[in-house]
Image (cartoon, rainbow, N blue to C red):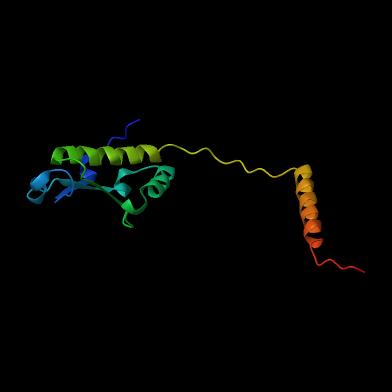
Length: 133
């Protein structure tokens, strides 16, 4: 399921890049910084929460997702890479995690735990100084 990224919520800027490109990187701005207004996308609440977790520091307080792509030599390749990474992040955010069903230990398990604690306590208690009376 590939998320459709509307153009009106994207803002692209091109920066001077580091990395591959030889002397050309000093002359041409090939790195693509893609900003996406996440609030405007209208994601489901669970997907938005998950996206915030997955994006981490790439997401600003104002709800902008910022992805910088600079691994390729050309603007177009970096543009495609940035868009693909944003779509992949949003797709991963839409995967619902199964609810955790809370369980509690059985009475027998609790009793075994207490018995082992008492056993360890006895062992440690007997480690005291030896008296020869």
